[in-house]
Picture 1 (tube, rainbow, N blue to C red):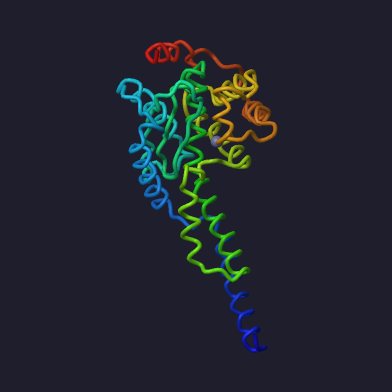
Picture 2: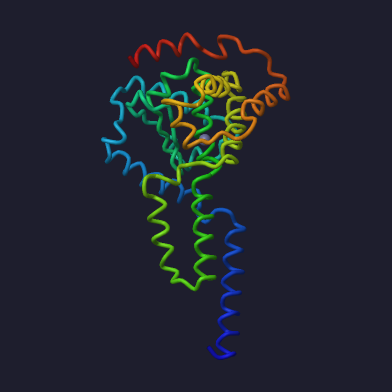
Length: 269
Ligand SMILES: [Zn+2]
């Protein structure tokens, strides 16, 4: 390699590095409507795979879950309710205590989670948490970050940029990108609290879910939730601090709706 070629190569690499770093800085390479488009594609994939995602065919239960989500997204904190569909589907699988939300707001809740939870505020809190992952656009931020790492690596190692397409394909395999980071979890917990503040539910609802999960040692069927929503440190304390900061006292039955929720659970039997 002659000196001129080396310098030119170095200059090019520097140029691409600067561009890539600028791209990193923007945080998300997707627009919100692209999040919705991506979610639509994933939703189609999920619907085409009933062996893994058996959708519960029960209009009453689905309408109930949708109505809880609809109340949560009325929060002034939810910005993308006109861009994201925020449609809910229930997966008929009692052994899995989990819920997830694709980019762009396609929400999936397992019957296992519905049965695990003991009151409506807790259920709304978990839905709020899932909605927050879409609102805060955690998945597409993560995809952007993974892309950028590959761009940087590709430039440094001098690889063909077409490797990016492979990276994108791999990211979608097994919906791996739906796995959240601990920072995303903290953000989603706090957002769930804020969303519920504008509803008649107890804003700390999600706390009941975490408390029960902790009693179960985060193992067994509930382990699934923590595999895609890893617990940040002091998770419960964060919610308790928010309750204290907002002067929120002990919840009433109206705020929890334990009785109403028990009836829904009976319908699930
Ligand atoms: Zn989460």
